Image (cartoon, rainbow, N blue to C red):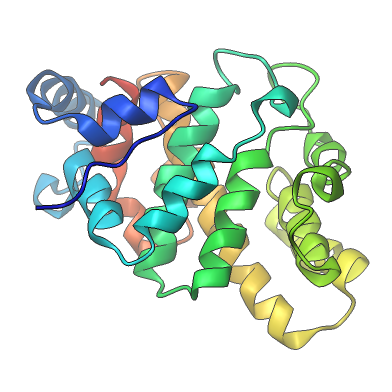
Length: 232
């Protein structure tokens, strides 16, 4: 039996990871998927339980818990749409995708740091293309255990997460130069963060994300899970 995970800073994560009955959430999510995503095969969809149990049973579950308990909530944008709950759901989805891509322990940690602070630079709701760059300016203060190279990588990912794909390489070079190894990690992390951020769009409307723009095949299997978590 998996040991109970305790989240000290989040009622929502406590509920998600302690939840045993998802019937109502699943019913709502299935109705939404049938209406707005009729072309998606429901048999391919993973549930919120699948996602959470994958994290719980992972060898990195302790790292996930410690990371979320270390979330510095004071610097987060205070908002129902882009605030702590959005950050935490995005981190759950990032964690699942990072596990799917066999991230190392350190890469997994950095992926969570990017998820936790990707909207820390927001000053308003709606379109704000520069909020990633503003958020990157806070990384040195909140990620003090990271090396300078890791901080630069996080700055690049957070800056790029709200900008067009065509700008990603230039942003990486601005922060990290031409480090080939870091660039490979950056490309994986930015795909994960952009997809996880997009999947949580069910909080904005029933339409959710446009799956044509999801970058990872595994992300397209997470519509049900993302919708269930929003409606839990």
